[in-house]
Length: 399
Ligand code: GLC
Image (tube, rainbow, N blue to C red; front, side, top):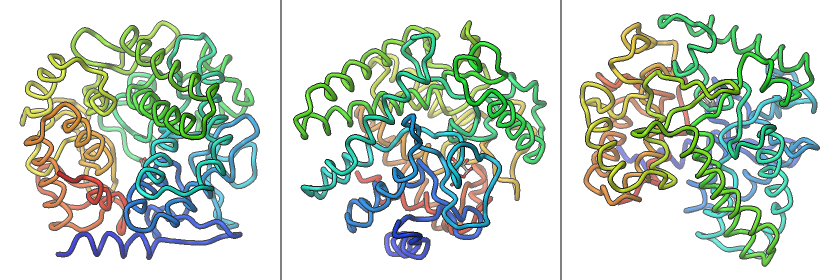
């Protein structure tokens, strides 16, 4: 199987243009919209061989930014296909997603510099990251909060079960209803994050979201420096450092980073892959990383499966309860974006052999099951959406 050719064909096949905006659908059949972090992944891949399409993807994503700076996690470009997570601006969701945009933009520039691209999006980038730093941190804790599991990118991850008192075997549909109820709650208070953090059901300082934020603020600082905008560079650098220390202070338990909820930072104890995410931004010390990788990541009894990295540990009740099959989920199955984050994290710490193994497992999955949304870690069987673009991330996992 020529994975590279098929990945490129899929990205092209899922490409759409609406009102002059060009973007890529994560899956034409299952996800006929533009999604935030998906578009960033697309742009990172396209940057390698079709940089103009990568630029258009990011410009399209930013074209529906809200007045307060938030970039919605879904743009429902096609009329009549409106979905639940709607608020504020007609045709977009009311939530955001792991803020990968500056990283993608810098990657495009790094691979294919273009005089007009960065200046064309810079103010919008700055206002998005200002929104996250200022509006999503009402208690000034140097951590950005999320108001719905969907904002973590991992909709039904069991790490949020405690908050909803959800049973380990909760069905996909029942979980979706909980999240939709949350959107109603958010809408009722007009997305007043100050209120939601104090009184709402869901207020989480997530490890992945803040890891992504740190690494993206660093990318934003490169962009600002390139554009000779000192104030922006200072803002980005300072906040990258503040959030990295905020994470260490409030999310680190002495061994691993854990997401927390509520104003009093109660730890979310369900054991998910998210503890590996900070490798991506270099947030563990060398010794901590070594222990994390050897004791947890490579442990076949918990995360290291025949077909990749489980998103939830095999020891977790949620994993044992299933969550496989047609109902795709974050309750165990392997997903390509976590592979991509951990792959780069392993390389960052010099674990080239382990990174190469993860890449090999990713290739084996695609060869066995094609471009599926997620995969059974034990058998490699594909689950969820077909023609799902994240498999193309393999093109950005190079030894
Ligand atoms: C699923 C994933 C989410 C992704 C979306 C579109 O909902 O959980 O992370 O952005 O699909 O691909």
